[in-house]
Amino acid sequence: MALRKIVHIEDDLLRKKSRPVEKFDEKLHKLLDDMAETMYHANGVGLAAPQVAVLRRIVVMDCGDGLIEMINPEIIATEGEQDGPEGCLSVPGRRGMVKRPMVVRARFQDRNGEWYEIEGEELLARCIMHETDHLDGQLYVDIMSREIFDDELEDEAEDEEA
Ligand code: NI
Image (cartoon, rainbow, N blue to C red; front, side):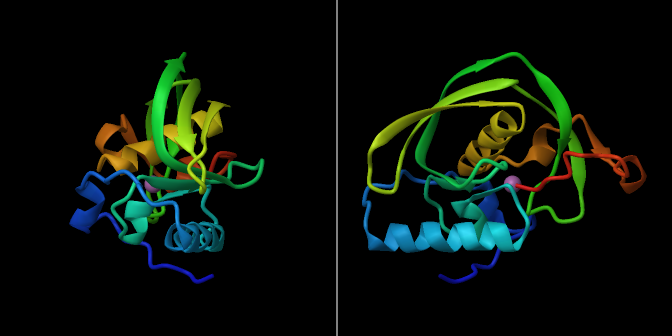
């Protein structure tokens, strides 16, 4: 495994639409392993392939219940609403308030191409939306209602980056 360089908001790559994965091969598995290592190393809860300069529909997440790998994820349904702080490993040192659905259902393929469904609530729902947005070139700063400043974050439990 190896750490990959995380690209930052100034890079146009983050604004491009990622293409679906078609080959579930060793190269994909290596990329997934590297992405997980890179995410954990950066203390993130999620990472999308465009953030490591690969324009493919691949995300890794760990919101506290173990590693989830999602290939070609599609949002099937959303329910409710939450408003909370959000950060991004590609937007270091910043936070914003972002409205997201409270519950998200998605389908995705695993590293071998098998289809699965996942239902996420709260942080996991937020993370699924944040990461799938990356695959379409969208960043949370595009949809945040406002920036959050450091002095507001002192007691903030959800101090996560994705
Ligand atoms: Ni992000």
